[in-house]
Length: 377
Ligand SMILES: Cc1ncc(COP(=O)(O)O)c(C=O)c1O
Image 1 (cartoon, rainbow, N blue to C red):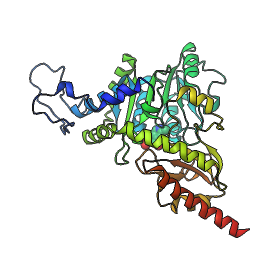
Image 2 (cartoon, rainbow, N blue to C red; image 1 turned 180 degrees about the horizontal axis):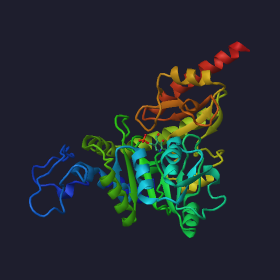
Image 3 (cartoon, rainbow, N blue to C red; image 1 turned 180 degrees about the vertical axis):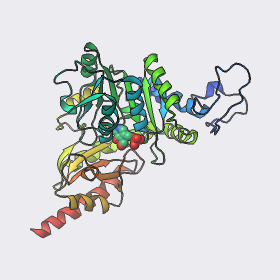
Image 4 (spheres, rainbow, N blue to C red; image 1 turned 60 degrees about the vertical axis):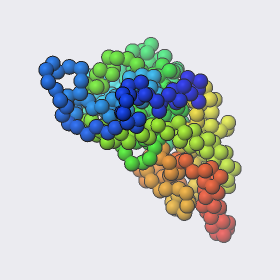
């Protein structure tokens, strides 16, 4: 973690302290209200639940504290991503997306932006800079990309995008503000599926948009208020609670992932392992330069679809689930979600279990496959 992230992590749990009156609860109260007492002049206070809510203010304040930016909360990661597109692009614009990032972002462009006259192109994350960005209004990157974990140089993409008149959006879902700081590297906007590590308990969907440009924030906020895709106060409250332990959880998850990736690399059942923290990974040098941590996602291949299913389903400490970033380790065979990966490709999301116990469970499941394979020879 960088030196600037540590004070932010330390003060996160005390953000409310300055505003407390005697007898106020120390933890954040949940405000469930669609209407607020609104006599007289209608400015400067909460009035209607689609415009604002005290529990949103608290979670946006906490997220903003971590991002060092203004934040707008949304009911899911896709709602946050959609808001940036619908608030910032218009008919005739062209945008650039990763060909290997989260597939729903491309589906959004294909099914909802294209019919409105907004064109899009795709490019692999690892060669995002090739060809430059002339003619694009927005460049959207996801680094590391989900699920193959390729990386692009955020500072270089931001510089070229700005020189050529484009804005840069970074989907920072896999990293959180403790793992990577795209706004510090020159990005205009961060979007995040807080459904994942930020909430961290797999019980809520949520998202946010962060930016240091007040004009961008005003447009995104206006989109939320007008289109009405607002987060529920209870979801905001849960995410606020999750945020209070993010630094501890994320630290454990990333440290465990480093240990487990090294051991997986040496296992005979595993091939094609990707983890940006390994010196042998093609992205490692760039990862060292721009990431504060290497994340908690690891991807690798097992010999077949069946082997991958067996590995996941027979491991006592892995939940078979889509999504990632929860306290429990989970894994998914990504070809079943339509990603362009081999049938035995596994995305492993390391959770908060003690690392030696977790490794023993993973190794036991892999050894079962290897033993089966030896038996078949
Ligand atoms: C990188 C990335 N961005 C965005 C999303 C969308 O988040 P949500 O499911 O909260 O809409 C996901 C979901 O898996 C994701 O992995």
